[in-house]
Image (cartoon, rainbow, N blue to C red; front, side, top):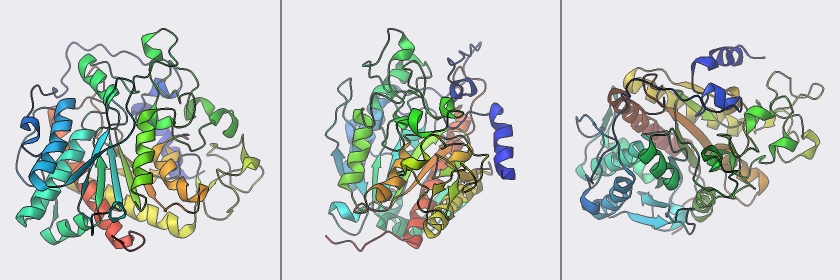
Length: 441
């Protein structure tokens, strides 16, 4: 076993486990932390974007202290404002949530106007309680468009970028969805209940905790974990219990929210780079999340039923006995690591808070996650485009809040700087490493 894996596991009890609290990973009910007061940054009231007549602008193009989080109406208004002020196009997926909400996104930059001109997909707020993700994504796009229009650079803390780099980043073509779990976020903001899942009650057993599905266990990647993973790790991979924070739903892509994310990947079919924004562990995670990576045995992969029941054990050795590792071609793995390292280094440089860069499985094995699904698509169907998929876990948690996923004002401002630097570096890395086939519009 690698030393870094031992170190990671040893430190886990002190941290959220990639969006999960320690008891949640073990399938236990979440401990309600009753504090005498909560110092989390408040959610705004009203609409700072005046119904979409004003555009979001973040901390990369101005010196400003953010004093409140965007409410769900402001997220929609901010997206509309980007279209009004900068002329970008927006879209709405064809799937409505249980509560009837739509999921919308925007398209910025690119070398053309057709769908295949967009090569980067940025997604936020799939887990409702992870506050600040929608803000960070909208502020970054606003900064990028403002800097491009006004011929200025960007500055995220100690990390700076020139206007030439801004134009390079924007040329990659960015499709973005700032609110991929609108029902869950609306509920979390109204209840302050540390709510993680969506709000679909289909599998509810009558308790409040049994409402909803963990959207980041609902993608079609090793979804049927009880059959596909080793019995010793199944409790931390996902759950079949509706009361669990990691309940994986009734089938892969059972939820309109995950169907919407798939729709974006299918519609913008030349996307090469994908980031799903989460909080909080201060990590940049690259695929795979099912088991350790290996490039020696090409038939040892998630599609091969020979390995059902042995996946997820990180202490074994691939190729030795029943030892398993998830196959990734060496060149693709190098590119995965390269871009992840650049993101982590940029986020660290911005505020001097240290971000780790590790394979997702080194936190704990998972099934049905968005990053693994995005990367798995070209293996499962060779006609589909290669997508380098990542999870970025911004921030470091708030121990004083009733929910540690609710940042303080100071933490939120640092988080926004780190998100901006990480996204900017991903776009530049994508432009350098490669965006795939030439645009044909």
